[in-house]
Length: 314
Image (cartoon, rainbow, N blue to C red; front, side, top):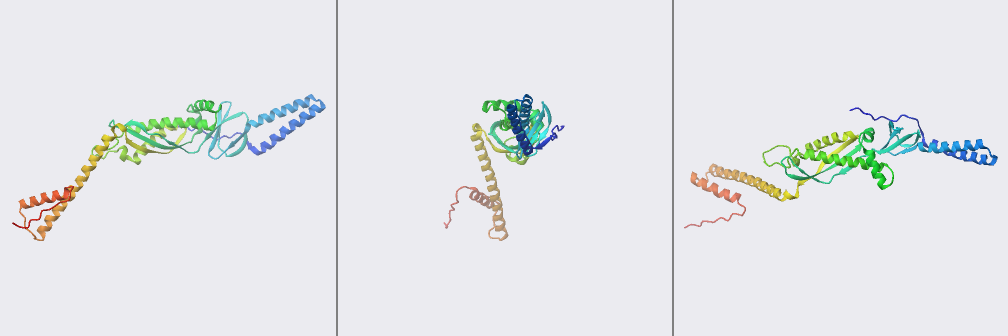
């Protein structure tokens, strides 16, 4: 995509120098006016009026920029560049400027309810770090000025940088919501099968975040907005199914624990039989081995402590 943004190359003068000259012209115009009244000289009075009008016109050319800010410069509606030099300057008074902030901003979106790939309702939220990168797109590719003008008129009666950035924040919030729904709908919340190695929202981690950042970059590029970082910061089942899914997770955890216990018990029984046979402590036939294996498994896999009965003889 063609980059239409470029640096403003028009006439630029030091603001403090022009301020001194403008003040001198203002004082000179009042001096001429005083002389014109004293001498009753109409030509001198006209010259004083023209000088005063010129000073009032020159006041419109002063601009000041802080670090992390830019001004989009327009000449009778035509874009003539972006001014990014920090300091106090004077430019062509016939131009109009719109001030924009280029600083990084955070968006901590409230969790929204979406359906995952399997249709389960989940609550998911994100945190987004963004900033303006292309001022031309920001000003002219989306209708941010109208939104900013409406917000500023209701609040203060004019458009300022806060109103402009609030318009961009609303645009980012809407697009972030859409991108989050799109990514969340492509994956399941969690694996329903323990042996399934597919990517899920819960286990995806960095891969899911990278896909979310890619989707956001595609959506926000039209407004000249750069995505610095995007991450899912909240993920949970929706309240209406949270209790059921919690029981499922608990059952899965219990089964996994039982599998570990049985695996360990079997290896311990095998070790016991091998030790008895190797050291020739006692010879066991198949029936006694089966009985011993059964007893050991009951002892090792049971939840309560074993209470053996000691046979002291008949």
